[in-house]
Each structure stands twice: as structure tokens, then as C-alpha cells.
Length: 299
Length: 132
Image: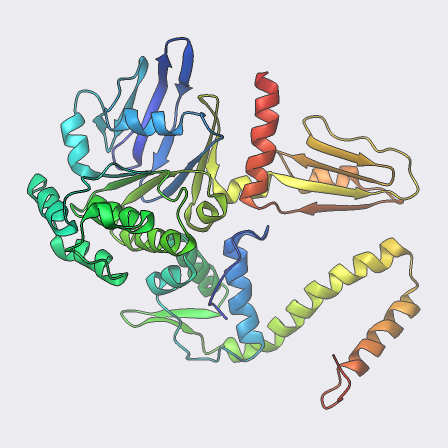
């Protein structure tokens, strides 16, 4: 578990709130230099995971490291090297944008004011405006400008795209991509804006009810999870492989999703009277298929 | 070309970008010696992960379609002109394979399929005013 290979590692990380297991033995690995999308239905534990990394809450058991530092024992050092944006982050409404960035600059010795100005100038945010006067999208841009001001090695974006208009979302994505130009910088992004996450993520993790049910590169995931369509106009019913999910049978066509696609599987399904095809799935469809099948399994 | 990708499409973004560049070469929109945007520029323009763009460039370089000149950027290679012809054939062959699969599945005769294709070619003849 070298510091160089992974920006975040967790080992059997568990967080209980009373009887609820918000995180249930999560062992995650976020490679350095990646944009990692942590997805899951509402209440899956995404925000809890981020809050443990920032030591805003203590884990019940297990451990986590950020940039090789223990999140509990070395939390101050962690905070110095991490930038954080949360949805609807509370900002001091009475402060002007300038007061706020000046204040944050005082907290970090590595502050780069020109990096912050660049983000704010590009969409023309008036630094004399009070934070309370800004639109929701503009506040999100201010938050990300401030989050990258101290040149963090890791950027944590917790639901940072949620509920934003398309222009603000594009601007956030643009800034994440710009931020990635720094060598070895890592981004962890949580949320449900899956089409946006498909654009920028190269690694994904799925949390369902506090459990990390899947962690993969996006490419592997898309190569493995496929929709199989069998057209069988002259056969009444076809056998489907074990483990198939989201099965839809109609009289002359059978469609299902597999989580372990291979060309051998496709060959084994082929027949003289059939037309068999494997279809790529958008990340959004993979998310829905996997979330539903794991929610059912957990019931 | 290279102005947008569709994140909702099921085709992986990596393949969408590769296809746009290959098609650009085949259609003559990209000629030998043309400079491509830097990884950073293209990632920002398409709003995609810079690692994905870097991988596209690397793989197309390996295939000989692109070349990187140290300190200058990524360019369409001098061999691209020669490769354009085979790129054109590849792109058409890929699409015909999809059609061929339906021809077989529908049980159409080869004769009928070829006639249909010849008719389609006639319809698309340059200068024909009534073509769609």
C-alpha cells in the first residue's frame, strides 16, 4: 500500500450510526492520478466515506489512509493536502468573494491567488459581490476555486454537480479537467450525475447500502457488463446463463444483462435459428442494472 | 470533428474519439502534417478525462496514424495519406458487416441484398438532384 500507488486506501472501514451501518467494511483503493467516481443510490454512504476521509466523523472500525497518511491520527496533514467541495456548502453569506478568498489564503502557506482568480474570471464572477448574492451555480464555482487554491494533491468533490444548471456543471467539469493537469493529482467525485461522471472518470466504485459492491476501471466495467439480445423468432424459449440480471422475456426475443461478458459466452448462446448480439451499456444503465440487482440481493 | 462526444451513448468515449479521428483521416478532414490539439486542449474541449485523450493519441501513434514530435505536439503522420484508403475501406466494411448480419437474420438472398446495395449506390451518385 505505497503512498505512490494509491491516493486513498481504506481497510474494512465501518461507520455505524446507531443500528445503521452507513459504511460496512469498505475496502477501497483510489489510484493516484485517477478521477474516481464513487456512485450509489441515495443513502448508500458516499458522503459518509468522504467525511471519514476528512476526519469530520470518526470511523467505528477499520482504517483509511489519504496520500499515505492516517485519516484520524494525521488529519491535520491530510487537510493541508486535500481540497474539498460539498453540495450546498455553507458559505458566509455576508462576506464578499474577495474577503472569502483572502480569508482562505491565510489558512494555507501554499496558496496561489492567480489559480483562484483564473477560475473566477473565466465566468466573470464579481469579487466584490457578497456570497449571499450569488446564484447556486456561482457559489459552486467559488467553492471549487477555493478548493484548488492551495494546490491540493487530492480533490474531493462530494455531490458537487448535484442540482446545478448545465452551464455551472460544464464549468465544474472544466475546472476538474484543468486541475488534473498537475502531475499525479487525484480526484474523487461522488454523485448521481452519471453521464457527467462517465465523461471524466476513469475509475468507478459502487456503494450500495454501505457496502462497496464493485470497484473497477471504467473500461473494464464497460467490457464486462453487457446487454445480451437474443432474437429467436422460431424458438419458444431460450436458456439464459446463470447470474444474468434484468432479464426481459418476450415471445420471440430475450434480453438480459451479464456481469462477466466474454466472446465465449456469446458463442455458447448462438444457434442456427437465432440472432445473438452483445450491446455496450452506458454507465448510467450499468449503474441502474447493478444497483437494482444488489438492492434485491440485500433484501 | 472533435468538437463533442456523447456521454449518454453506450459506445465508450475512448472509441468515440478514436472513431472521429479515423473518420477525419478517411474523409480528408485531417491530412498528413496537420497538428492535433494538445491532450489538455482536447480534454477541456470535449470535457473528458485527459488520461482518455492521452490513451487515444498513444494508441493511434502505435497504429502509425499519428506521430508526436518532441516539444511540438501531436501530428497526423506522413503515412496517413497512404493509410486513408485502407481507413475508408475499414469504415465501410464495419458498417456493411452490420447490414450483412441483418441480411442473414432476415433470410434475404445474396442476390437481393446486392441489388439493394447497387440501388443505394445509384441513389447516392454525385450530382443526382433527387437524392436525400
